[in-house]
Structure formats: C-alpha cells, structure tokens
Image 1 (tube, rainbow, N blue to C red):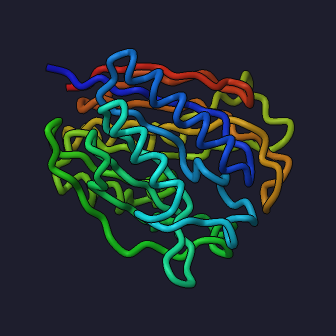
Image 2 (cartoon, one colour):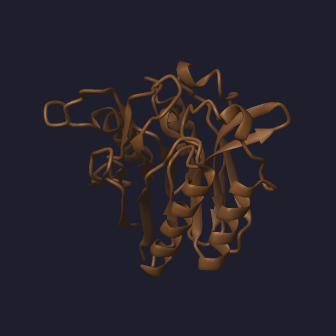
Image 3 (cartoon, helix red, strand yellow):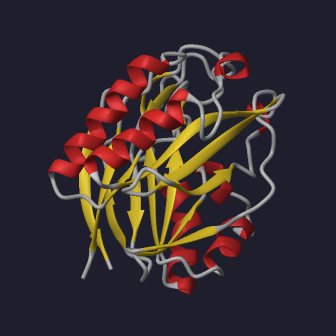
Length: 255
C-alpha cells in the first residue's frame, strides 16, 4: 500500500516567522484534510534561507516556538511533518530539518552538512546522518545541497541506511533574468537524485519554497519551487510548477 505525501511548495517571506508559520499550519491542515500521511515543507521555512535575521531570530528545538508550532500542527492533524527551520543551540545556528510524528514527537533532526559557501556565515555545519523507523517504514532526511557533491557522497551514505523514502526540504533559487523556457530548471537535481534512487531503491521527495529573496547574499534572486519527486526505480514522479508565485500543494503516492 502506498504512502500519500503532500509536497507543500509554500511561499516563504524573509524574517517573517509569524506569517510563515501561519502558512505552514494552513498547508498541514489542508494536506491532512486531503488524506496525506506526510507533509513536506521547505528549507528554512521560518526565516528564509540565508536571511541575516537567522543569526538573531533562530529558535531552539524542542522548546522554541517554531518547533512547538509544527509539533502542535502535526499532533492536531495526526500527520507526519518534515520541515526545514533555523535552529539555535547555544551560540550556534544551524540549517536544520525535523521529522515530527503524528503524536507531535520529534523523530529525527538533521543539520545540513553541505552548506553552500554563501550560507556558511549564517549556519554551522552538521556532523551526522540518521534515519527513523516509523509506522510508514524507515524515513531519512537531507537538506537541499546535501545532494550536490559530485560523488553524491551524502545522499549515498544516507541511502545505505535503507530508508524507503528520503525527504529533502529545499530552497531552490534563480538569479534575475533567468529564463525557464530556455533552460528548464531541475536538471541538476535529477542528476543528483536519480542514480541514488535507482541504485538503493529509495524514493526521494524534495520540496522547495517560492518567493522573492528580500535580503542576504542572494537578495534579488527568486525562489521558484519546481519541487521534484523521484521513485525507487529512478523514475520522475512529478515536478511542481516553476515560478516566484507558484505556491501550491501537490500529492503523490509512493510505495
């Protein structure tokens, strides 16, 4: 029997935790109402990726309000929630993704390992990979550029832990003037995902946000969705719409 996953390609506004959490809660509620078992939200859903506010507005896990809001929504709607967020621990800030169970309990926390150079002033580097055994099977998490080393080392190491599904919150962005008709977005990620999915028989579901990047090193760029799912045979399940305004929720079923 398949697992129904909601790919919540939501709009993320820079340094707007309240607004972003409201949208995230709405996405979780809508997805649960449509029978999804897992809801996947984007990378740094709370503050936006590489927003300078990350250095002062990051919140703790599990006591911070971002995690508590996501946990409460997962428990209220009885769904698994995978979301990116900006985590504070001591004097460090991490680009983190969490997996929360339908009871609101934290099942898995992943801190991004392969951060791009422009992200390194904002986020400390993660130091481990892990999986969680759940009622839906074994699930793994990575974040965006974790998939990008040429040898696919991070994705491969995670896939060797035998998750049935790898969930990947992302923040895919393009520079001003990018022409999607001329250069359709997504080839980079297909090259990263398909060989690993096929070799290790794991599904990979990557969900990006949409919206203009308002501050930080990529100010003026646009996050454009184009979220992508690959099945355990290496076939593309779906690619969501491209565009700064292309917020949507799409549903897939994976074995």
